[in-house]
Length: 251
Image (tube, rainbow, N blue to C red; front, top):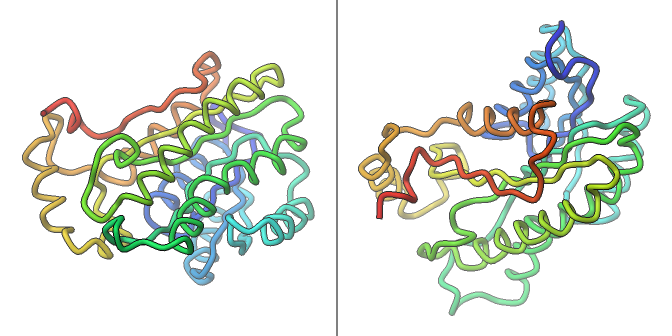
């Protein structure tokens, strides 16, 4: 398989389903071999790898909790046995607690921050030495980084920290020809959204206020990640690309 990303190796965290799966599939279609990270979804991760191999790409699944240094250490050791380089890292795995901020604890804070923000630093620290010819690091954010959303306070704060870290890493890693950006998605109806108590309201509000169309798909978000990985995006860094169909401009 040829493509604009032929010969590249990408690591996508939380890649077994939802937006992560769409990103891994899109990058593979562009020519990437893919390291598929998962936490609990072993069968789904292996099924994705089988699909990508059928399409002619190398693909292997690696279990890790991305907010835990020891687990990330083990994952990169395992990745090195399968791939001799990394060119693209997509920090997509996320977690959090949906509760009012007044009910949150220190444990909840650490959970959100470690999985959603600190993970990006861990991934960068391990990946950069493997990016011999430069590379791309892309973090997945959300509109809650800059907007107040019910029960989303600590997750939103972690996403705001993530976007700040993206800017810092972009400055530090620019001289190494490594571009660091974030993609902030609107409301996407994935399995993760089923955990939101106001899911139906979120979807209805998004559909009503989005001028580009009522539905945002995982493939739409994956397309934005793909764009940032192309050679033509070489001068885009430290940026948060919003993919929301125009939701945020509608009041």
